Length: 104
Image 1: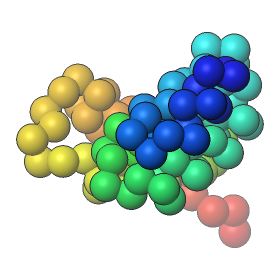
Image 2: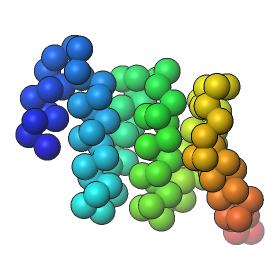
Image 3: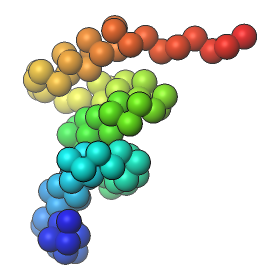
Image 4: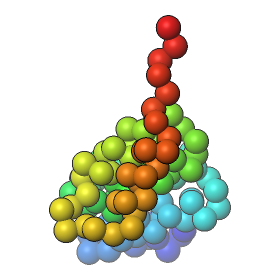
């Protein structure tokens, strides 16, 4: 992570380094840190649909109720050219995991 943090100081490598840092938390199952990291990533790079996908992964894998919104945010921000398996996977996830209804 130290190399990613150092690379974030350089504007030319900042985006990729930030993404690598966020993914490093996924590999170690530090989902709270990953959600914090990806929240910053989507603010800093709102046009990067991969940042939105990473955010959805972070919340989903953390088991957070925020996953429903994060998944929808990714699908909303995914570029029209993006026709990869992740888009279909998240659409299936939405069908298989409907948002719980609020308690009355």
